[in-house]
Image 1 (cartoon, rainbow, N blue to C red):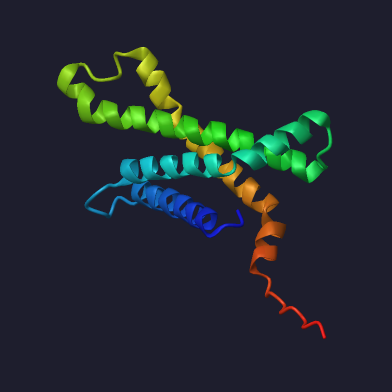
Image 2: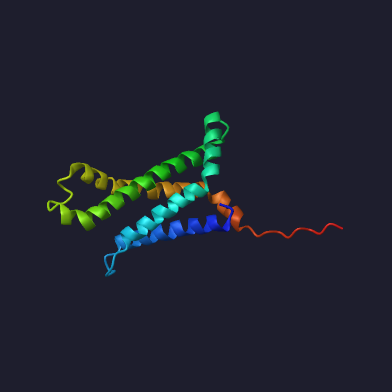
Length: 160
């Protein structure tokens, strides 16, 4: 994204997603904000998609018309798969968090007895794994854009 707001949203997504993973994998910490940070990353991902909606619709039109080069096709497909994987992971994680927080109070047998809920919650792990792989692939496709964003700007020459 070219705007300051867009860059901030991208940074927040990366920070919250990474921190969520750290809280999940670190058993040393006495508290766990994995679910809360995951929800924040999910909300920022929605904001990211909304802010990029014009670019995504333009890419979709070019993709349907067959006018995208290979890198553009890979970028579009990875973006759509990333949205699906991330939102599947987020929704299943939110369902898991709600089940852990509230279901035991209203349904004493736990969510193992509710098969459809158990199936949704089971999707969380594979969807997160797919999300991580797609983020890495997506960032690799963005390397030229990232390099371009960090290039030193040359000052404009004065016209005499």
